[in-house]
Length: 369
Image 1 (spheres, rainbow, N blue to C red):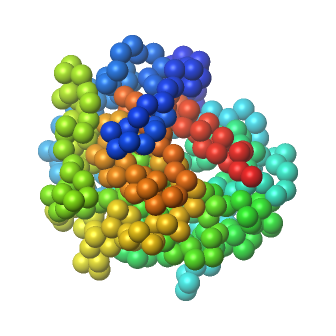
Image 2 (cartoon, rainbow, N blue to C red):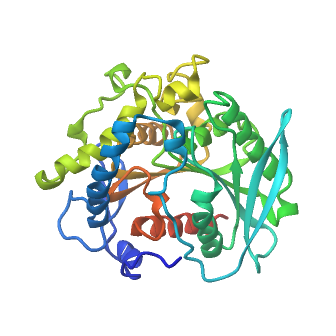
């Protein structure tokens, strides 16, 4: 399918307009500006359209009630293949503990051996997400970087609750490191990235990485603090709507997008936290919420890139963790996509920031020494 007809120059304009500023926590942040909107603290025009569409769509879904299948099969999430070169895809079953998991390996046909390798852990609230939603993004990253991209299909909750998904993801990272040369990569150039729940799983892997396999961690609107905001001690930070700068015209729309993720942190039986944890641990476990890790654990982290969306509930917690890493001496950078909300990578070919984010991830791989 052809991508939606947005101006193909818009992703490049994001870079032309990007600027640095000082975050409220004192860190420097690289702001990825809306490419075709003037002024600040506004919603991207494509996101405004999505909000209007989803109000109609989800009013009928709300009447039908929540279902797991409704979360896993989302016809509203469509991606497009934006690659122009041939990318090979190799599907393999690899052993993890006492079972096998499926992985997909994406490589340019002319990739040279010894390339960096990205292990990408997908989001979906620990209960959804698969290769079909992320294949085009992985292909584009592989094309733009020349690197190897590995996408594990880790087991999902509620069928496989905590810590099963972590075991699968960490097993995949270890397998990639051990078989790097076999798949055309360099074992000392392993990058680990994940969005949303995949960001939580990526951090959990690094917490177990005593050998230093992971050379760079990239959290994309990561779930680094999944505690209910009422339970977060004031000595750490305070979550509130006041943390989000938004113009009055877009306030209702921005808050509606923040609330859809905020509701997933609640304690209802259908919340992602409940389905993932099932009483086996709590959201205060560092393997679930990186924000709860001790200083000694965080000091061992590799170079870290934290990528957030301006109107995402998880942004405040991710910023807090980034500041802790920074203060502990970990090389860490903050990137903020303005006017966007949680999950924009899911809309490659529709949301222009998704394409530019793939470029950014490719740059991180291509620049790995």
